[in-house]
Amino acid sequence: MIREGILKVDPNQQNEENFNTDAYLAGQFEGVVKNDLYDLNPNGSGTRKVRMEDGIMLPKYRLPTEAEWEFAAIGLIGNTLFERVIERRIYPWNGHLLRTDYYKNMGEFVANFKRGRGDNMGVAGNLNDAADITAPVYSYWPNDYGLYNMAGNVAEWVMDVYRPLSMEDFDDFRSFRGNEFMTKVTDEEGLIAEKDSLGRIQWRPVTQEEAANRRNYRYSDNRNFLDGDYSSSIYYSDDMMKEGENESKLMYEYSKSSMINNKARVYKGGSWKDRAYWLSPGTRRFLDQELSTDYIGFRCAMIRVGSPIGF
Image (cartoon, rainbow, N blue to C red; front, side, top):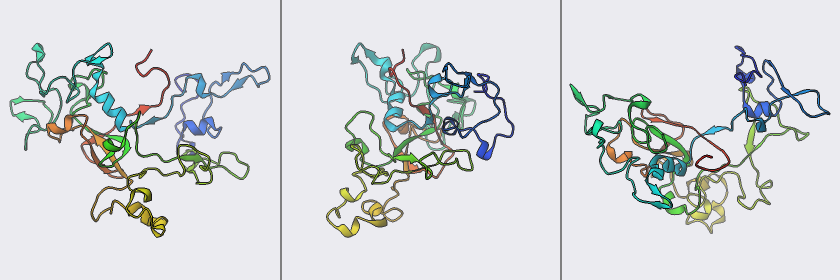
């Protein structure tokens, strides 16, 4: 909006005055206005605020789902002929080797990974990837979608909650585990409540009463749906186990017999610290969403409409 000349740069934009798209659209962020948009409504005031349909603001950035990430990483669009996939892949490139066979770069590694125990970059004087830890983004070739580092350099968070049998449970389009249905907090008059101390609109979980007539869910938190919830446990007929904190521990006894709970998120791809096995987009690991490491990063995805391959 600054680029479009609608708002001015505001050095005091912090805390509750921090810009947030939801807050702006709800009329709870003003900013230092330079020029509002011209209002074509004959009954309007002559100017108006930016709307989502103006194409100036973008949808929210988010983590990709595991299915989205894996689809983008494998990049089979480069191996299709009409409606046939003519060659499958182990890695984001063709073949089972980790070096390129392109004549100008024959024998060079195509990703930043750990070749062996203690070997992060090769022998002094003849380094295989010239990167003991992370390397610049454009150090290696992109895949057929033009995406860099979908294997190697850093592993990447995805949005899915981890379950060991997710690939056996999923059987539909754009599968995802981790749904938590939320709704905006409202005041007594039904208006959107005031933003929080960081300028964000407040959200709360959907209640069972509000979800009573929904067809796709009955309660807000569906992260452990059919894998860790009451219905999927051996206690499904015991009403005493149905309520309270017991439900989240019916299948995975976190910190005792398992490290899996509803905060365990999937991360994909290999990193500078991993062996070649993890470079395959099909591999998956998990870590508590509150933790971080020196080899896990992320990339952003965005909701959009239209053709999935562009226009």
